[in-house]
Length: 164
Length: 131
Image (cartoon, helix red, strand yellow):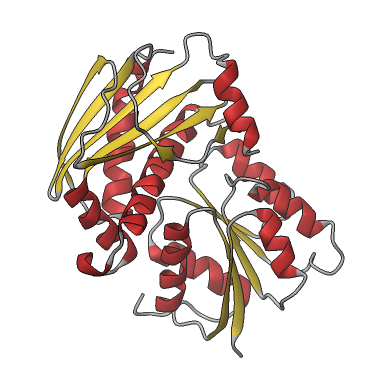
């Protein structure tokens, strides 16, 4: 399975998650294959590992102002009342929920494990990923998903094992 | 009767959302208890009275699957209803959790009414018509 095979799932799951729990509507979506780039100063990025029949990494990249808006919607609070930590936690949960939704639909008949979402600081240059860009009524969201070449990334597996 | 609910999730944001949904559901909640993993949850369960456990699956230290097995094998805790709220929507996981004693399973993302309905089913009463 290649990253590009996930295109319809990523779009479907992102639309569903944003609509039902973040009260945000996806207006347009596009996807392309490439390498992840590091987040800029005004962006937040979280990634997590998934492991089941398919192994890989999933990430979310979002502007800080958009993240604040999503956090307010998700938590039912005023934007001004939210701390940076709370906003980051919501972006981490968004990454977790999106990844879980996508992988669930791939791994319908087998159990899988997700690692804890962590801030994504540097761009791994060896990962070919499917990038998806979502234009919503609240701003832009970017996601990426990379599938391990042989499904046996030992170092990454240890990360997942550490939390299970 | 005021209920005591334990929310187990490694995401503070998700614990907050679950708590808000429960608040809006019309239940008389006497005490909210929270834990960031299964191990913390067991500590709380041995120290406090709990009427319902709402737990995630993917958590560090002790995950929700291990927590469920620990609860169902503990004579003092085995009778407490466990409602699973997880991003894992795979049929295999849902079946496993239900086969091993979960009383309900909600997949994230979820609409508030789904959590409310499951809670009424487990704690008794009728869903709040306004929710």
